[in-house]
Length: 304
Length: 259
Image (cartoon, each protein chain N blue to C red):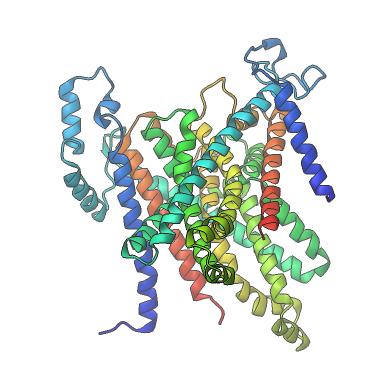
C-alpha cells in the first residue's frame, strides 16, 4: 500500500535527517577511534599499574577489534546508552541528559526571546512607518557585530543587576536573565531578516489591496505580511542555530549553569573520552532534531 | 572612491602602522602599574599584571588573525578540492554518496565538535587552524560544487564550447573563478566565528597558554576586570568590531567586484 501524500512528505522529511545523523554518528565513532594513544592509559596516567589499565580497557571495550566496537557502539546508541563516564564512574546518560535538558531550556528561551523581539520590531516597523529606515539600519548594524561581544556585555550588565550570589534554580524562569543577556544579536539577525522580507511584501499588490479594503496596518501585517515572511524568518532561525548554541554555552559558563558546557569542561579536565564522545553525540542529536523541527514548522506554515 | 572606502583604507593603514611599530611582544610585568588607566606612555592602559594593553592587543590581534587566515585558507583549499570532486562526480553513484557525506559533515555542530577534536587530539594553539579548516571546508565544497554546476549551464559556457574552447580551459578560466568567489566571501564571514571559537577555547581552558595573548584571551581577561579597568575590555571589543566590519566590507566589495 502506498503512503498518502501527507505521510509521504512527512516520511521524506524524516528520512533525510535520520540518514544525515547516522553518517554524523559514524564520523564521531571514526574520530574517537583515531585518538592517538590508549584512552584507558590517558585517563589513569602514565604511572598507573598495567593491570588496572588492562581492566579499564576491557571494561570500555577498547581491547576489541574496531568492527566489533562499532557494532557495540551502534547497538548501545539504539538502546539509548551514551556510554560510560570514567570521571563519574557510572553511566554517562544521567549527567548528559540532565545537562542537555538545562542547555535546551536556556536555548529555547534565547530562541523564543529572539522570535518575540523580532516580531515586536516588525510590528513597530509596520505601525510607525517613519521608524522603518532607522530600525532596519540598527538591526543590520547590530547583526554585523560578532554575537559573543554583545553576549559578554549583556551578561556583565545582567550580573550587575542580579548579583551572582543568587544561584539559578532549576525552574524555567531562573534561565530568563542569562538567556536575555545573550539574545541581542540573534534577535537583531532575525529582526533584520523579518524587516527585509516584510518590506518586500508591503510593496506587493495584495498588501496594497488589503489596505485599500480598509484593513488596518496591524491587521494587514498579521493577515498578509507575517504569514508570507514566516518561511524566510524560520529559515534564518535555522541558519543561526549554531550561533544560538554557542551563546547558550557561553551563558552557562558565565552564570554557572550546570548544562552541557560543564559536562564538556569535566570531560576535558579529566580526559574522560567516553563522556566527551557522549557529549558530541548528544549535540549532534539535538542539532538534528532542532533543524528538523524548524524545517517542519517552516513547511507547515508555508503560504501558497 | 566613496567615504567608506577612505575610512577602510585609513583603518588598514593604522593597523599596519601599529603592527610595524610594535615590533616586540612585551612580557615584562610591573605590579605598580596594575590596571593603570590610559596615559601617553601606555595609550590603552595596563592589565592586571601591569603589562601595556596596546602591545598585548596588537600581538593578540596578530596571533588570532594569523590563525583565522590560516584556517580559512586551509578550508578554501579543501573546499576547492571537495567542490571540484563533487562537480565531476555529481552524475555518478559515488558522487551522490559523497554529497551525502559532505552534507553530514557540513551540518555537524561546529563548536562542540571543535572542542572535542582539540581535546582528544591534544592539539596546541598553533595547530588549531588544522581543526578549524577541517570543520569549515564542507560548506565551501557545497558552494563551489553548486556554483560550478550553475556556471556550466550558463549561456557563455555553451558559447565558448561552440567556439572550440576546451572544457578544462572554460572550467579554469571562467567557471571556477565564478564558483570560488561565493566560497571566498563566505570564508571572510567565518573570521568573526573563528574569533568566537578562540573565546570559547578560553572558557573551556583549551586556549593559548599564558602569557601568549589572543583576542579570546584578552576578551576573557578584560571581561573579568571590567569593573576595575573597562578600557581593557572595551579596546579589545573595538578591535573585534573593526575586524568584523572589515570582513563584512571585504565581503560586499568582493560581491560587487565578482558580479
